Image (tube, rainbow, N blue to C red; front, side):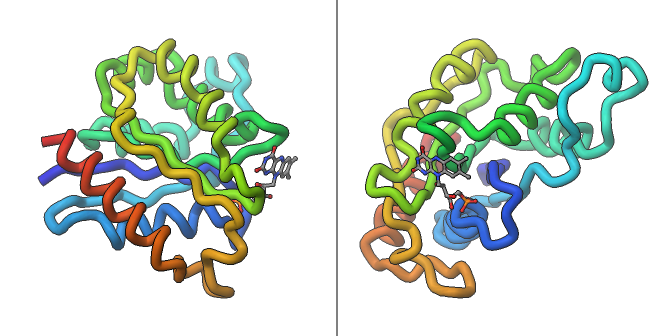
Length: 179
Ligand code: FNR
């Protein structure tokens, strides 16, 4: 039974990306477990802080990654790049002892934004990060959810039929790749 750590990179309560991740968990194939998480509680990376001990929020995310067969990054896009808070969380996770957790780990990327291009540029900006961490990126599926306010209802449920179909296929493909 493949186990996926799904990480949403937005702190916003009504985040489209958190909503997309919850939909991904529901539409994943039967037998696939998706551990739905966010980056709440992760402080700004500071080597001096780290010298006093790794924050609990980071230790929790590392433990979840250690237990996962694959990592799903659900990334917003800010100024055509990776939002700082999300990059910061991954930097913390991969610091020191955390680096080994990413090596050879299958990673899939998706994201949602109000713009038509739906995070395509942020997804591209993740590529050097995934390469540097020695991950095994899964590139057989792509999912950009553009015009997000039209695709989710006021409670954050993914209502757009075409997006649900594409998301289901994406999750089936990633789960299959995890064996
Ligand atoms: C944005 N947004 C945005 N969207 C996009 O598609 N491309 C972009 O370059 C940017 N740039 C950007 C910069 C900053 C500083 C903010 C705050 C926002 C809009 C962004 O996609 C939108 O706020 C989403 O709703 C953020 O994701 P969550 O929080 O809904 O998951």
